[in-house]
Length: 425
Image 1 (tube, rainbow, N blue to C red):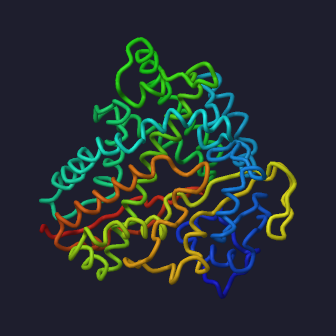
Image 2: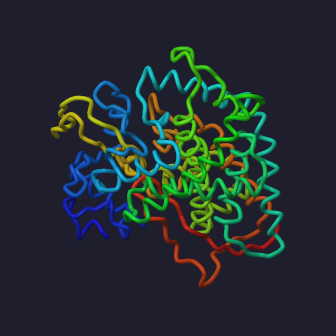
Image 3: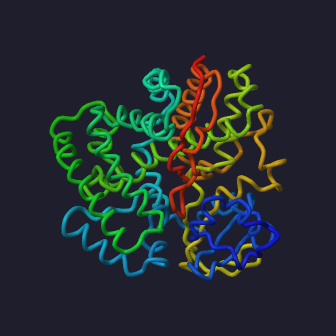
């Protein structure tokens, strides 16, 4: 879909075809309709960098309630799914409460205080050695084969193992069992499933809930030093209680295992694909990783934003850059479109290892809801790419094995698989 043969009224971000490569569609919206109400979904889509930043900082007019995996946003596409899904959770498991991402202050700030402790700099420093070792161990497990599916054998297990360490769940079999449930949640919030697929996904999520529930109960009786134990037992002063079961189950799916794992997986996959497509960048990184790798990480996050968009709700009637947005409207904030805005970045479609203020992208959001796991994600990406640079002399796409397809998803960008060949260093 090229700029020449579409106008903004033709853009359909729910189209699987568009989602495979949405960037020309984003440019069309940025240029022609940077605040645009999509007639199909009813969402107001915001795409320019300055507009996105302004919106994220304006918590008075734009609420985070109904954000992320919001039932309200989802119901605009799949209205008949929602009630049945809630009933299924109610009958067989626990109805997920609003997650951290879907709360406004003061509620958000009060709940975030638990996570802030877990992601303070000293905690990230403690994890760094584990991140480094895990990165090299994963590559060493397949290095002698000369090829691998980078997504399956590296991008998925690295952040999954690290969040497992944080949560005190290091049994390999248990982690992959959890992954089945969190994958179901990942696909469900993408708003691209049929009714039958969505209900099946909820069944898988409920299986995950029944895995976690006895762990919650055990940790209440016998706390340990894991992040999960902190989540279970820390009393939120303003609430006069710790998180309840419904809140804990929501956090397991959203802000911990998907937020803390899936997004980093997507960036690790995107980065290696970009390196194979840009051999000059590979050479420069190989020549001096300490000089260039930090900026490369930021460029990957900017170019292939793992979180393409999230939701906000209009808290009141507002005119935003000339467009009337009624109170209660769902606003789709397109971080990925903002990150390729030529008004904010020179030659935004290119990797620039000398880019000034490379970290000014919106991949981690901005303002109150800036991703609290960003420092850890950056270290995982740095060590993941560093291990590849150290272990691989050359890398290339495996012939006739890749179709470079992405999971259908309205909010996230996730490469299904990436088969690569390499020479050992």
